[in-house]
Length: 366
Image (cartoon, rainbow, N blue to C red; front, top):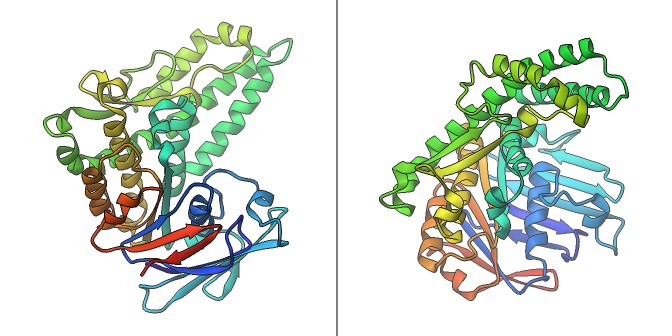
């Protein structure tokens, strides 16, 4: 588990050491006091990235030249420690277990983390690109080969769009690029569909509790772009190439690539109906949280990594009973750090550490 987190010079947070509870840590306080900044600091420590994709100069305190962060991990027979210096220009100096490393690759082999805010409903409400990113980030972390295929696909796609942007398009070159897109794209689709299946295997045991009488009707379907729905993963490459050939004139006219994995989506259904609109916002939120949790189960406990779930008021709109149920399920497999403005969330678990935050200072309640 992650035992202690040390913070200095990160956003508005004062220098301090916070000891995390083995199961549930609740950080309580008004808005704009530092709750989200604390979660961002923990996430940055574990991944080297900001969950909000913030620039480095925004994360470093205006009062100091750099931010310094650290954490200790126990459970490996001996403590392991991680330290990061972050400069305004984005330069990072990472020290893991007493040795300097260039990237977080080694760290992420030991630590698994997921972060979600109250905007978890974006998983349903945002554009398809948001859901693709949700899938692809997991695939990148779970499947060793995925990143290579994704980089190759993006490179070919860039070449194709550059070609389509020309006044005169070389049709033979376009045909060659379409063949390459179909071949590499079929690999991306294979990984994405495998990921959806694995996530649903993890989600399914919880559905009966949260969606009584309809848990068996909930499914996640991969939505191919360009009227390819119903196509199997195995035949996707050939079908996509056929579609690209048929729609070649249209793509030349609009000067961009219109079909392929970069336009795909997924949809959550209850029977034949989309979940959004069928269930309330609260129930839809629960499913989104379960999807997120399923990724952490796959990345964390299934692979013997230390698992940390960071939730920034993510239980908004849920009643206390449902919040307590989710916290019980989540904390069985992961350390949960939950931030909130609600006093009732002191009761999220019978076994937790409660902190209050004000003006960047996080203090343990007696």
